[in-house]
Image 1 (cartoon, rainbow, N blue to C red):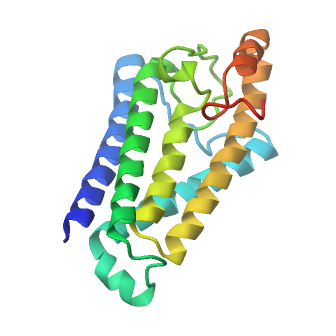
Image 2 (cartoon, rainbow, N blue to C red; image 1 turned 90 degrees about the vertical axis):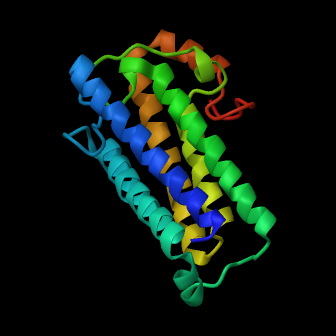
Length: 205
């Protein structure tokens, strides 16, 4: 494995470890089963959105792992769309920044963190830390990692995986916003009006 692949594999392992550890900590310390993605009957719109995310992110994870380990073999089948090593390492930088966004978002959310939309439990609205600047910093992190994977291993499959996941995550965000408006009402609407959905510009409230 080349250095690029080793770093990519380490980042993948860190992502899986941090995600799994958060789930375990919430379950053991607080009795919270945080992974509610695609579980229960939440209505057609939410169910379909969550299933889309569940499938697309699973594919993303598999592709990330395979590219990290078998890139040379995959390149024989799917040539890179561009071959500039600087861009490939920029991709790793995107993944690293995205992973940090994701980890700090999980930490900031404490026991309110969920994977998917939790219809059963009313969680607290978190507005500090990264959530002062974005309503969805964890999803910003995911999008950076999706883009980063494509830049690191730029072929047709990673491009499709990147676009599918950005679309699926955005669709889930829209469903989550409706849920939070119904659950938290004016508290969430006030936060929504002053904080961007992603970063910097609140173009689509």
